[in-house]
Length: 435
Image 1 (cartoon, one colour):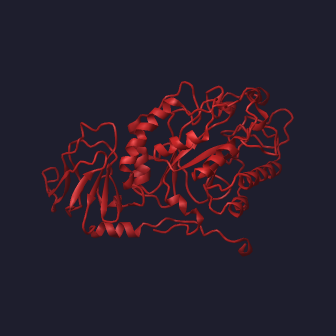
Image 2 (cartoon, rainbow, N blue to C red):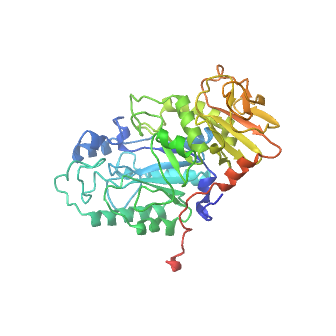
């Protein structure tokens, strides 16, 4: 398996992260795109700064919550499309210090992450509903038109953006990544990412910014057809999802995805060789949504039971015909991910034939029986294949089952697929003198 071969390689070791969407929009509890969606005037929206005071914010509890769920890094929204800055910036007064909270929120979070050795990544929305130089043209996330007194000027806005990126990369210690979003400027310049690379060589950068970046970020659910045809990713990928069906930030009457649905989503992406980023939103006081935390607790317990099938494992799902099953390999172990609910108390794995030494259901540690025979379902088949039997299908309906098949020597087809998996990677980071 090929990596970046530099400080960015942490991204391939830590696979599950916490996404935090937090800002003024938590006050109304509607949506982080509230100003755009409701067409609220800038002056009206600015009133939120008079009351924003997340005085119950405890960065250490956020980190502890993430770790208890098996998460190993955090992505925080320093600036969303409303343009409000969650750090003490010299570029605008529209920031967290000029609220009743009165302190640098990002500094408190980054200090805690550094003390706890917990990687922190920065989310930054390129679209800006507040800056008078941003050329709002009614695109998705943008205001329908410039506000009174605006002076749309893309170059001036980009100068503003570059200064903010420089602040974020200089003033908050080590940053492990930069998550761009909503580039509707129709502008591409890899020089902007080089600001980050020069100042933060260990930071991975997603592909939603000003060039293709280091990795892809599919949002919400991947296209089902694409998943079933591709089976494993060809480029570093981090899929992002939220507990809430409607919003990424806090929503007071949110509908939530089921635990099983999210487990299947996590399993699918990680089994394909990607990373997974799950959004847990704080309310206006700075407390993580208690409704989401209950779900995260159950998902985290499941994840800790089965995570050995993801950590350091390589996707090899092409080894079986079924699109309902994902496979990963680590050492001499084959992991069978029952991503889609099995229809029976057994699962078939044609054309795999080689019996393992042992089969263990990671969810609870029980040993399972594996046989090799033709069965009658595929009566025209000319070979035998593996069948894992006595699955607790009716008993374990609330989680994704993952089975470890232990081999003394891994079957050849699995070794070939594992060794042949290569990601399309960007070039190693160049030194300044090389550019």
